[in-house]
View 1: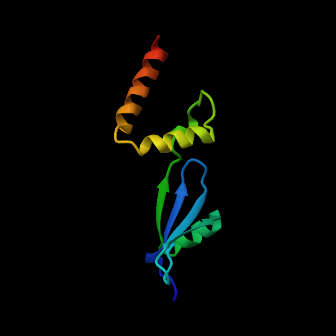
View 2: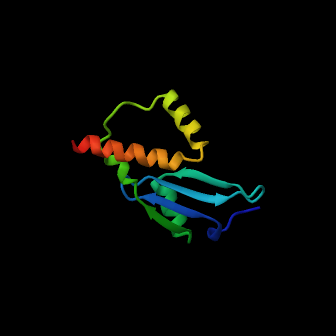
Length: 103
């Protein structure tokens, strides 16, 4: 089975101009994403494939301070999420952190 232009979407990052194209596999219906050079992007768009432009998340450009996340931190977070009061606990930690930073 061949894909039609309407089955594809070209995605281009406006920050670094990396391109890709996406489609659903005609056999299993799973989404597929493939990297695409500028030439492939131009060919696909020129053939009628719709294009989406996207931006990198702003968080990538933020300074990140503090200790690195360790496997034990991830395990603690996983265990916390299994409790009923996980959100209240996290909200209190954020409030405490903000008050400590402001002092």
